[in-house]
Image (tube, rainbow, N blue to C red; front, top):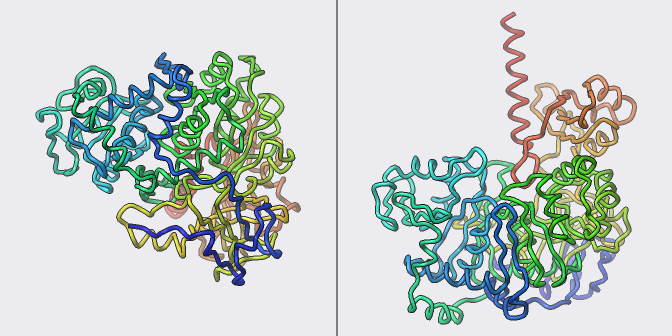
Length: 591
């Protein structure tokens, strides 16, 4: 399954120059948009569970994870013991190396324990989006053949137990561990978080108590059977462009990426990192949990889901020094600062990622949240995830306007439609190669081959590199609008609209048009407590950008449809806009 990742030593790019001649100084080579990350620090041959054991042996009594909403605090020693108890219990259920266990839950202590316990015995953890509904859950469970599903009882409007009962109606009449459902034929075990019983399912606490002495002894034997290069995690892409695909990642992928991410923000064992981003995504699970554990830092989870007030309270009460978030989270926290007036003096660093960040927001976060060393990073699930990131001492403008410079042990090139590396400053598709590239999409060789060619992950993102190696993401290859033969890049128009003093968010996309092939459409969110009109937006564009770039259709909306990780879902906007325009056409035709 999948393709072997390309070796740096074997690299050839564009004009055939040898990548070994490129020094690791971040500057592009020979005027071409190709960069190669430094070779230090060296890559670590560690497993996910080995990372935790290292931390527990060094700082056993220190806080490892704090779950504010659940009122749970675990030291590294506590966490390590909880992981071994659950791992032994999973062995008692009959789960073995290579089996898949799905986890469907918001940010809870059980999630983190399960993350390490599955890795401890070589079971692949399958991350399931907490926002998924019944058909999406069915798709994911069957796509990878999950033998077990661990789930919370509910989250927000989602009744997880109720949904799994609809998917497997015979659950309540089955003995725990003996589920046999037509719609999810591989699923045998349902594990519900907490200690209250659910008919036909195991309780999380009950599984933790299942393991006997023989299972505990088996844990030490398993250590010798695990390889850092084993697949250990399946993360489904966020679904911004259709059906999600299961990116299959190894210990080696995610352990090393986590290390390098937290190297860039200079995280250490005295830091306390707040994680309001979801665990099911690489941002929370890899950059957050594994990144903090690699540095023996403390993890702080403000709540099961993001709430700006709860997050600001946690930052203050737990004296956090770092925080992660997508731009919309930081916008929400900035809006609460005046009313809450939290003491954020301990904050220093963090990461803003997941979507492009308006410069104004970054500057306010630097100034008003004391996050003077916050970094921007870029990546994708398929690259474990980060390939570019700022340094904490990069110039403010570089940290606002770019996604930083390439990570260690990775190569990046920017290519045109023919696959030729473009000159520095020219736009093209960003491709990544190195240790971080996934093994492939689970049991889908065709999609894997389409995405990874000669070890290069073709990201589908448009980007440019400057002469110092800083990368700017300029849009998506598939987002490009072709209107009457003119190539239009939505990101350029979005950046222009952000300059309007009343605009908080803007998303630009194309919709079908009989005359021009495509027309430009923009959805815009106004700032709180201001009145923003379509006529104002039209006047703002007139004479400032080329006529063919001015959106034919503007909509002022209350919110932009997003994935749970804060990525705008342009395909949803496009579908709604087409439907709306079709309805308007029908109304006119009837009249």
